[in-house]
Structure formats: C-alpha cells, structure tokens
Length: 309
Length: 265
Image (cartoon, rainbow over all chains, first blue to last red):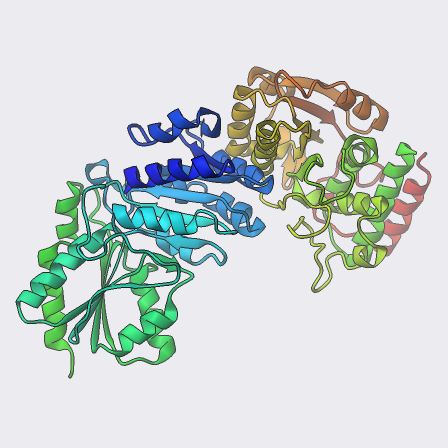
C-alpha cells in the first residue's frame, strides 16, 4: 500500500502544486519517487512529529495540502493534540499518513504497532478516516479523498503485494465494498487484515457456510446506513481488524447494531490486549491474537454454533 | 499615538476582566505593549481575510484579552462583541478560537503556536510572498519540548520571515520560572539554536517597533525578540505577583487598577 500511496501522491502532485509531503525522517525506500520528482515540495523535518503537524497547519492555512508521514503511532499518537488543535479545529486539509497499522511492524514491538489509531481518530468529528485494504484500494482511496476540504487520516499498510480478491481496487467515499453475498454470517473487515478475512470467508464457504464480506475502508464519517442494511440481513456478524477491539470497526458496528435496534449477534476479532514483551512476525502475531485465517474460521464457526436461529 | 494604544489596551483588559469576573489579567498586561507595537504599525494586515496579510499567532493564548482589545481598537471587533468576552455563546473565550475575525490561528495549549507560525512562514516562502509570520510566546511556554522542535526547524530552513517574541516576565502559573524550571540564559539558548536574537524592553513600544522594523526578513536566520517584561505591568499590586495569573479583581482592586492605568502616559 505504501508504494501505491507514494506513486499516487506523486502523480497527483504533478497536477496540483498545492500538494506537499513532510516526513519525520521515515520512509526510506518509499518516499524517494516524490522527493526526487518534487524536491522543493518535500521536507524531512527531522524526528519531530509535533512540529511536523504544526507546520502542516500553518502551510494548509495558506492554501497548501500537506501530507505528513510517519510510522503509525508516531504519526497519530505523538502529535495527537497538535492534530486536534491544528487541522481538526481549524478545519484545514492536512493529511496524516500513518504507515503500518496493526501489527505490521512485527518484531519492532509495541512502540511501532498501530492498535488504537482508528479509535482515537474516529472520535474526532471533522476528520475523514480512511483505512484501505490493499494497494489497489489505496490508489483509488487517495485519488478520491486527497482534495477533501477538511483533514484526512490515512492508515496505510506497508505490504504492496497482498490483494483482496474481488476488491479490484474499488473505493467510494461513504460506501462499504461488498465482495461476497451470503446469508449465515456477515464478515466486516478494515485495513490490510481484509486479505485474511477474505481467505477465511472462502474457507467458510468451502465448509458450507454462506458468508457476506464487507470491506470498510472509509471508517469515518461512518457508512452507517449501509452497515445497518447489511447487518439487518444477517443473524451474526464478525468484525476483523488489526486494532484493539475497543474503538475500531468492531465498536463502530456495535454502535450501529445498538442504535438501530438490530438483531445481529456480533463478535469482534481484534487485539484484546498485548502479551507483554512478546513479539514476532506479523503472521505469528495475527495467529496469536486470533486474526489468522485459521483462527478467524474457528471463531466464525464457534459463533455460528452459538447463534440462535 | 502608540503609547495611547497600549494604554487603551490596558483599559480594555481591566474593563473586560472586571465585567466578566475572570483572571489571566497579569498575563494580558504583561504583553499589552508588545501587542500595541504589533497592531499599531508592525503587522501588515489590510484586512483580516487578506491572503497576503502577515500572520500572527498568540502562542500564549491565555493573554488573548490583550489581542481582543487590539482587534477592537483596529475596528475589526465591535464593542458589542467585545462585551461578550467570556459570556455564554461568545466567540471570545479566554483563548483564541478559530473563526473569529482577526484570529489567524487558535491557541490555548502551550507549545504549538511557533510550529504553526513556522508553517505560515514556510508557506510564504514557497509562494514567493513577502508576508511574515509572528508568534508571541510566553517564557514558561519554552518548557515545552515542541517549542524547540520548531526552533530547530526554523533555523535549519533559515526562515528569515519568521519572528518570535518571547514575553520574558519570569513567571508561570505556579511560581517564578527560575524556581519552577530554569530557562536561563534565554537569549543564549535561542542564539545557540541559530536564531538572530534581540534583547529588548518589552514595555518600550518605540524600541520594540524599531527593533522589529530593522529585521531582515528577506534572508538569513529567523528572528527572536527576548522581550523583558513585568507580569501585571501597569497595576502596582499585580506586578510580579503569582496570584494575578488566575485571580479576578474585587471592586476596590478594579478602581485602583483603573486609576493607575489612567495615570499612564
């Protein structure tokens, strides 16, 4: 997704001189296409994320569209109050790009994981939150949202190879992308983990479970009506996100179910809490936290066996 | 003319603080002369929405009443609106909110304003505009690490169109800066970071304006005025007193404060 993001941004920058790219000294072997094409519009501000967001606020007030880039928690959590008091309060088109949501930084450990980014961004009114599922969707999501009038948060994965079968890069603002239609279970996925969710849905289908699959890439403002329509047609829903269970897409779906008074059993798959000090590959961690294909299938089957018809 | 602007600003600070029964009086009085200097001849602002105006960030947002006073004197804020200060439904809170005419950037959380001003200065450079960006910081605000992130960036980029003013009154909310977290030597610290540093009397409007007029904003390093000030300046019983960071005035205190301000030149 990261490569797709930078390529798309570089293409857009050719069309619109307002686009700038700021990094807090991260993005080796990623940001070079933009930096080389537009050296006067690329700023490595040093390891100083708070200042980076403050700068972007000042730049945006003067008419620029600054993209600020760092690894997920450094882009979101370190300068969070600057984001709140800056682009959000001033309603300015700053774009926060947090790379590597979820457990993508594997052995780098907790400091590098993005497990609460969607939660803390989603609570802020006025910021668009976008979490693409794969590289193709990253391209279309950035193309559809770069010019929005207010701030945008992009949760961009590092993986440029994984593809969500059937998604074919589709993205529409305010829409859920529905990739499978079934009747037993609705699976709703956010971010790069959608690849695992899609594989789990296929495995469930092979075992005779009729599943729907919805990809929520535009997380906020939430596609509430569309989610409600999907949820109303299924007896059970499984949300899948490489994020803490609280605050992300699982919480969003719970809000919709509760506020619309729907009869749909919800199971939220995500990280409940971290095993202190334990790291490993992303694949290992996904399995540890119940997000591997196998674990998702197990959870789905268990959920269905417990759901009252 | 300028002296009278500072005096008028002080009068408004006292009137509105008393009417609304709120504090932060000492902080606003501390910057009254700096605000007078800026708004009476330094800031190039033909009208508050002109894209080519100089930008100003009151990084120490808790002194905003001094700026409301200046906006009122400029005619950008009506008396009617000024009289809503700290009332229900007002746009004029203690700290500046974005959306009020004449406010370029909201503030209230210390340590954020200089970054925004640096962004405004960088924007002007990228747009090849002669406009400048000003930020007024408190001395204790420099406790915030993020201030020094912006200081480093501005020096590295040689943002000569960025002008910081530090209101060096030596006080913060709970004590004197030298007792809470020493900032000395303030001027040497900014100089060591690569800024063009000027130490000035923060209550001498003419000296402030002369210094500001002499800055080369078309090349070289960013500029900072270390403005030596007295907290609560102009009201004898507030000067140098910690309690006037938060305290509102009684009727008797208000009468005395107004008498002293009216006696100023």
